[in-house]
Structures are given as structure tokens and as C-alpha cells.
Length: 137
Image 1 (tube, rainbow, N blue to C red):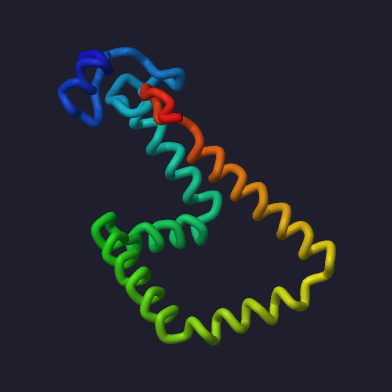
Image 2 (cartoon, rainbow, N blue to C red):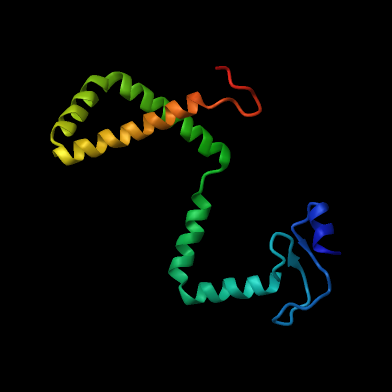
């Protein structure tokens, strides 16, 4: 079976009967065409080179969030941040005002330039005609 056929069939591994550079004849990964046996040898040697690091990586993978969990965490975080800002916006704005008041004149001018650039880009984007459309002017 070829890699293309295996990919079309939705397989993760395939065997084409060819030897890898290390001489293994066996399964290969569809994703990168790499030899499965070579990947195992590399993983074992990496483990023996630094077992503590590999154990830490394994533990991190075991506790990683699934995409669904990650999305729920993002939603909770956004909800919390919105509520926090609503409850503390006056205090946060005052803190920002004090921080900006302490800026040097050079820093203040650099910030003005940065904002001018951003607003200039936004204005240019608003003036640009829509893709494929005609100018409404």
C-alpha cells in the first residue's frame, strides 16, 4: 500500500515493503513517512538520555486539556474578566491614568506616534473599497 492510498483511507500507518535508512522493513507513519521502528528507537534513547525530563513531559501530556475543556476554560475566563472589569473599572482606569502620568515625555510621544499609526491604518482600511466591489465614492 502506498502512503497516498493509506492517507486516502484515513489510516495512521502503512507498510510499503521498502527498507528505511536504518534497514527496518515495517510500518511507516502516514503523517511524515517515517519508520515506526526508528521512532521507537529514538524515543527509548531520548528517555535514557534524560529520564527525568521525559517523565515530566509524560506527566504534562497526561494533564493537558482537551479542546472542549480548553474552550470552556476560555469562556469562563472571558466571563470572569468581563465581570471583574465591570466591578473595578473606575479603579483600573485610575491606575492606568497614574501609570501614564509617570511616563517620560519621550515615552509619551512614542505612545502618541503608535496610536496615530494604528488609527491611520484603521482609517485607510475604512476608505478601501470592498474586495471585488466598486468604489462607493
